[in-house]
Image 1 (tube, one colour):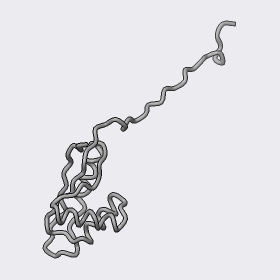
Image 2 (spheres, helix red, strand yellow):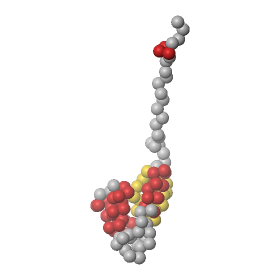
Image 3 (cartoon, helix red, strand yellow):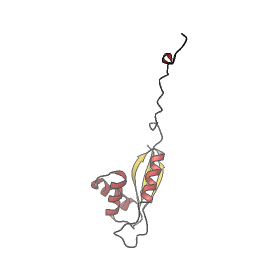
Image 4 (tube, helix red, strand yellow):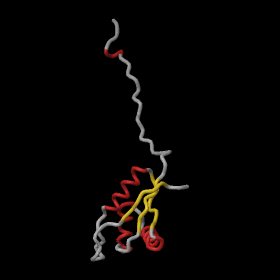
Amino acid sequence: MAGTLTDTKTRPREEKRRKTAGLPPYNVVLLDDDEHSYEYVIFMLKTLFGYPVRKGYELAREVDTKGRAVVATTHLEEAELKRDQIQSFGPDPLIPHCKGSMSAIVEPATG
């Protein structure tokens, strides 16, 4: 008997893997604005990046003293997502005149 259903051979499926290795890195840079407290920055960085309080404080101090701080280095898509999350985090409830979120930019990482 020629070919039955049970004689059918199937090819192994090729798995598609999402490639992130080898993509050029980008920095997420938090910009200072003098309208947000250290507490706000520390809380935001813990919420969005999972940073412990000490790391959040160090980055808050850097952005306060230098005007900017690299808060993450990753591939472009994630860097843009993190920038957008920073910019939509909302105003600082500890500062009455604060009207909105902090600003951040994405820039190519140099290395």
